[in-house]
Image (cartoon, rainbow, N blue to C red):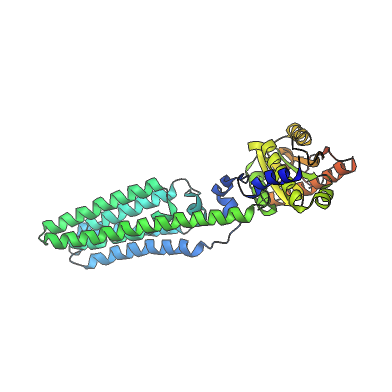
Length: 395
């Protein structure tokens, strides 16, 4: 293939026509939150504090004749409801909000949705103890505070149910206020104010939370992607591989692939052609690896592969890389050397090291195997012995 054609084909990858790095990684909270610093302690304790404040406001209503004052049954009900805010606040103070914000999933399944149900039903039950419906309608403003939590920490379906429930309660309080003698215009005004506060804040914060996540996802993808080839960069590859090692109980293989005599290609044909070669190799590696793993560019002409495969599958993968079908450069075939190592389940379960340390050792072991492949004459591969719990590769 002539140089101008080769560069033109490679430029397709450089323009971003082929986006290789998978955005699915950013659906994993560990992958995202491990790269950004979000202090969620203050919001967590703030929500717990507001929960206690709801209980305090319920107790204060027992002092008002429009509330539950003068009715022992109503007072007992509102005190019991207010008392539940203490254990709930303690539980809320222990829930990790950053992970929940990104994934809408809590460590304890459904606890975020359960909290919304508790808050909605609890506030409604408290309002039912008020003897004056106008005071109850005024109290529905608390639904706006709950909406702030809903917008950030639960799924869309739960947010919709919350909005419907609070709308019904607010309208019910408005009708009750009109029924006791308040003019229809005043009752309508107060009802619309409460609806605007509860649903308006919910809607605006939902939009803000969604757009914040979208912007953060784009920034993280850019920070973890090699702009030249579209595959993960060193940072992104380490995060993806570490996450895979942490959650995978089977074998995990790491390979390092290097383009043979790449410096000669740059010197002879120029850096534009060298960049096109890198883009073509990256696309080939992604095609060969498929959905079995991830591909990253460690730097220069060195790429890394991480995959949940055993030794036999790793050998097959290395052979496919060696037998790749990349258009030759001006009649010169582009070859690659590969070094790999497999970390089996026995070695991993017997190790107390962190997943990050395992990935670091795996890359180093694969790099040593790559050096052996280079010494063997290039255009070949070497698979290192399985990593053992001590972190060394037996010879």
